[in-house]
Length: 284
Image (cartoon, rainbow, N blue to C red; front, top):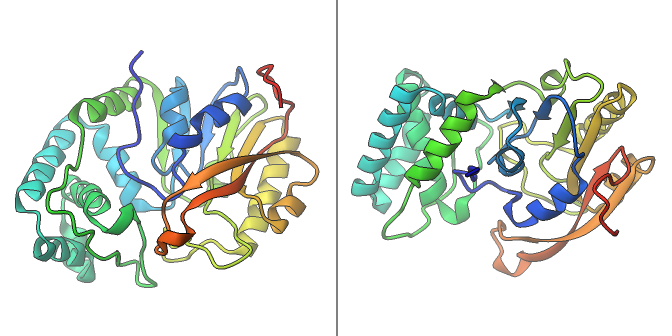
């Protein structure tokens, strides 16, 4: 079976540690939940028949919804073709600044907004998605002379997966997204990462700080008590070690490329936290 791949570059994307995530995922489960879906690397790799995906970033979720409608999907691709043709630094800032006028921005069609989201992701500096306190996209131009915004075959694969399976798409708070999870369901949390220093977490205008990490840990425990399989990714920080000390913490090495300072990109320690024993028979 041909599997989809992430159609955007997302901070903390999981493509390069997908083998480790698969190693620690449960063999069998009922409904799959991913409350911070981002680019959806694990979602597409597992391709569960029943899933609930969510992200607080409404522009990203708008793209997922557009991909579920054949007509809107085609119109979004036409928008992207036009953007590729007109691509320049001046054009980039023209598209980026459309959200400065909320009234006119809200009148844009959903497929036009979806095209804008993908274009900005491909054309901006280092594939960042960052907004300011007014929820305005504020990443500078990436200096690419040409930009390839999408791979048609992959988008069709993703669209087919989303429409031919029972996939519910939400844009709510992560706690709300998992409220219906039951015993035997599998929840994968991939939140904005904690850091012992400052960190990039401006995926939404509200950010995701220490108190949110603590609230997430409480939700993790509640789901565990409910009999769900729960897996979480995060940085290997003192806070995360403390919050999840009662669970299985697997330390892994990952390579991270999203950082405004190139010298700070490279290998970092991350953790995969599970509330169940490693079920796939791999050596630790």
